[in-house]
Length: 450
Ligand code: CO
Image 1 (tube, rainbow, N blue to C red):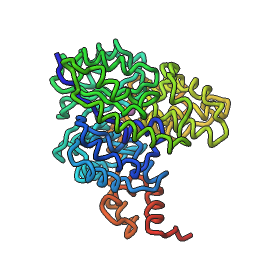
Image 2: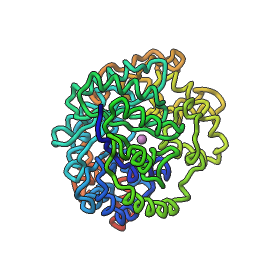
Image 3: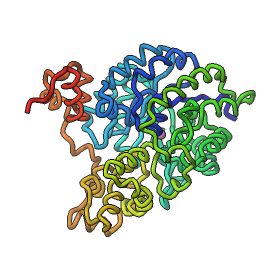
């Protein structure tokens, strides 16, 4: 069946997003760039997901500048990024013109592969980003978000993949963002997709419950082509399986990755040191197999954020209670896969339910928007209790959510004026107005006038 297995290395994006709360700085990436560029990965995940937001918000870096620096330092390797469909790299829907401008500029600054997903597998939320990536002449992966629920069957995932294939994407990604995939389910779904769709299949999984190395072996047997891995020091836990582990497992077989363990060893040595620098962002829950994720379904990136959020309110001891509350919130919302932004919505609402001690006595605005249909169509029905609480007599929307939005790029340009030094700055501002402005001011050495 399938031959050589290709790997995407996640150390510069998902791995530190999961293990170090997305805090890794560009200065800790550049010294190892040349070696990373020599490995021969199918792609290197360098951008997107939470990194854009974290750059501006926490570490006061320009995300575009990071991309350009990495690109200049690694001319050979394909750069891949994660796009949250109409949410781009944020947490709400943006108008089409902002999505298009973002993808066009990301391509121009060095992204070769766009992985586009929507938390609800609602293709109406993915189409604009997919089309923009294809128009830029780049590779687009259409992602099928995996989750476990009474409404998610292998045929459901096949149907999503078939609809994605019709959009013209060159690769289908099965995205197990929560680490919920189990080996035999992986086999069944991938076998099904590969037998019906003649496109390469790229599998993304997290080790949270300890299952993903087994998933990868079964996926290979089912015909998967590309796997996501992280260099050993930033692997496992809520991150990906280790790159070295997969390289070693496949060595000398028809699936041999062709990657050199010696070169990977030098890179690993470097990242062992880097991880130590970010010890304050580590969470103890990240370094152990957490099989209870199979119940709470909290994805890796969210777990560290949730812990940080609770710690801020001196309520870290409530973590288990919040995790226990998530499944019932999720059921009430129609079983959305717990990936951004649905993971945040369920997490915040579960936290509110626990902190107030009374379920839905306080309903977050995001929860309201979700029930109104502003995030797209959930896979299953929203509970009557939730509808009654949130909508009253109102009806949810039925159109594509972004159809309700006015174009936003020119408005953003006018608002930010001379503080934006480039088109990329305008886009940063359009995506994250407050934190981008704050960043521009601090970059220019100014503070906001009161
Ligand atoms: Co991930």
